[in-house]
Image 1: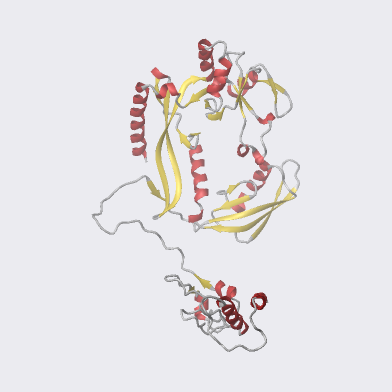
Image 2: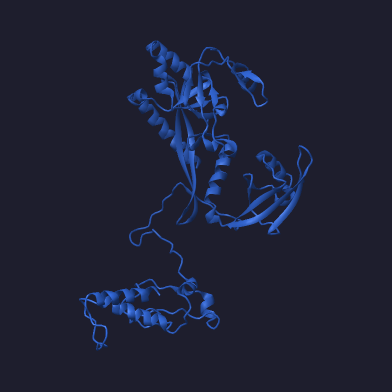
Length: 435
């Protein structure tokens, strides 16, 4: 109907230009200068009316080296599934049916993407060793399950406890985030229904575990990286930034109040030779100077504007608390608060920072007039994906926070950089031998 409307519009346009319509005009070839589109549309409309494929010069010839392959089921059962009609270069369609092209194309399978080999074809072969380790998987894949609780369980910790209660069925090796369960083996049923009791009130909870996806080893790259991060935590490595470091074997530079932590870089990726684990050496420069010591030095240099100077030099930096080996980003300095101020605990009681650090970490605060450092956790660091609120901010004691990284003054000191370069070279050699 659309093509007929176009033809009628073209005919009306011809009448408007004064062309005769009463007498039948003798057949003539369509000149190149005008009317060619109308003739092509008429031929196309006649072809569609006969149920054939689109022919004529409007259909370009197939591109070379792109030949869709007929799937195996189509080739072995031609009686059940008719072969697709393919337009040849001459424009004549092959024998086929009037089936819509979309249905015919859905049965055509293209070859998978070829594996790219980057090995050379000429020259002399030599043996090299790299820091890539091949990963061989014993299992055929990882099975992903969706876990549903009835009645609904809001607490994530409670969901973990309920799933742990059925470990005799699902096994002890698992990865669970509260809703998605990963297992290295397949459960006997597509949907497994288990029962457990909520430990708080004894209510019966129905746990429905339904298989949703089978993940091949090549598709488990993200899961492998999570596993290696857990291994680093088991080895008591400390994460500073993206990498993990060993705080138990530091190399100290006492004359510059620095120490260097050795560490590792691990990453699993799909390569030409299969799944590979990249293991590389890294190092992290830490300062044995605390934030409180830096503040006191700044007061001596600039008594009148030390607050502005401390804010410029500290806000945005990363500090390390050695009592728990965690890193925090300083987002603000609370000059109006001291460790003698109190905060509300999860139980609702008021507790001072002095008592908290004494009870939790056995740390005694010497300077009771020092300000507090404020750290606002990112959204991904809060449980349940909650948006950070002011009440969820973390207050740190400058006396217990150690600075990380190098200042501009240290970077410009040739002696400091020379000592660090020698240490880094030795650490890399030690880590390489360990790998």
